[in-house]
Image (cartoon, one colour):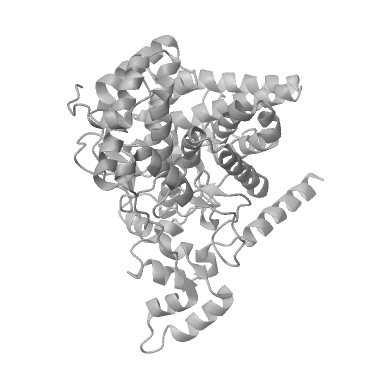
Length: 530
């Protein structure tokens, strides 16, 4: 019976995958030719393009024509694909103010329910949703929570519910929430913020929301914990790591060990510089993409170079805090369903995870929460803003929170807000860049331990930077240079993006949270004491 079940399960998985092929699977040879050419400066363009006819017919034509004299690859692609158009044409009236700008952007960034277009890489969603902006033309998992914070301030509860329902739909259909609603993202997820989204909606609509989404919360948890029963001590499988003492923690993981289709040529070129087996390098790069922090020295060895990336060896502090919250949220939902026995089990798992986080990720010498390298059995030497997550979820003791608050103030706080790491590596998730979601988590976590003055100082510096750039450019950006606020942020695999979903959401939330007059903030002195 067990074998029959496994065979049925494998058939289901393979059949599901066969119904959602990626562009590389649909267009073997043509895909590689396009992505290694200079037709599109951004590899994401081709994987988002929609074929005008059945891929089999396009491939037949390509194979017949590609070796003919005078064959023009660009002309062939443009004749056979609808290339995505830019949505960056929105021009704001700066004089109307930043609130008006954000209110208008909710409409600009909103997408209607997707029509299931044949052969498209888009995974159709049943409800309207907000995209980040720029080159990001689809929904993104962890971005969306911070976008929802702003939607809440704009009283757009229906949009929040639509987006949470979309994520529940993805869990039901694919067994997890992909990085984004694209076929080429079906091998990985992102930081698990679904429980945070459900809790946000529950604060607005009541505890019945927990009951409604309880099945999907449990399914997401099962995705992250897949294989945990069988994994041995000091071993890992998929997203699960069993520690030497038998406790379970998690890591980021991607089920594929091939180049990312949306960054194909960059991955192929980078692999040539690595000493790792090629498949291992690709897996580590993909796992970093699953983290949302692509890329940062937190994933590299002591050299701080991308070719040494070792994401799958690392137990991330932020991921495990989020999973602790997921376990606690499931327990709350089960209490609402009067299933006290199962709720107790999830609380037990949450408490075990909390103890493991405190045991393996607290660095007593530095007074900071660090990632843990489970292969080397040692803490990471790279301090990052991920160390603020134990405050957000009340995992840290009062003394640990005091030390983290001191570390934030003395090491991470810069003129424009909090810097992501202390390393100036050229990677976008390192210094000098600051990102809206990490500002929010730090601020919210500090307030939970009553470090209100520091929290407001961080918020004020961040908002001042956001608003100054808006006054100059009419844009809200994906990330900011918080060290030298006169310079734009750098690093990354693509140009600086504007829009921008999570920046808009966090900004609006913080302005309302602290009752800040944005015009008055713009007039405040520029000097900041560190």
